[in-house]
Length: 129
Image 1 (spheres, rainbow, N blue to C red):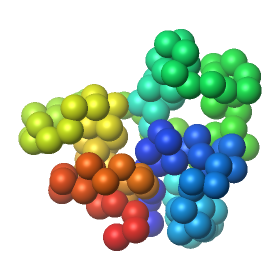
Image 2 (cartoon, rainbow, N blue to C red):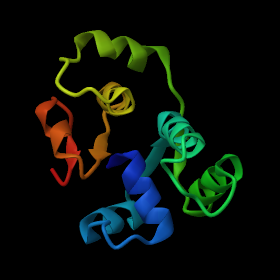
Image 3 (cartoon, rainbow, N blue to C red):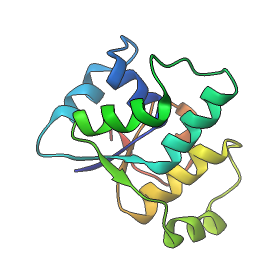
Image 4 (cartoon, rainbow, N blue to C red):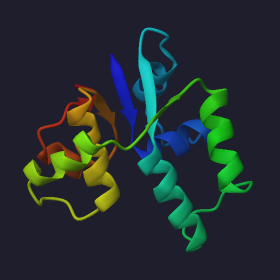
């Protein structure tokens, strides 16, 4: 299975946060799954950190890529096909970062790993399915 981690899921995973559901942790650690983190999530984290809304133990420009690599999570670049998918996406959710993650999951045939119940309004596969 191809998994795209929502930003909060990635942050919970790398910090060992107890809010991360066990099913998510198992899926992320399962070697049969290909796990990705979008550059959109890095962008979102950088923005929130610069606004003082996200505390991290180190410089996010170093910390986030280092932990992504340490856990064997691949980078998903933002591509034109995903951006164009936004035109077909209903305006049900206002968060632009989440909307782009939805587009990427749809465009790349991935399951989106998220605790955000609002994302279930979209035609995107969510973990758990």
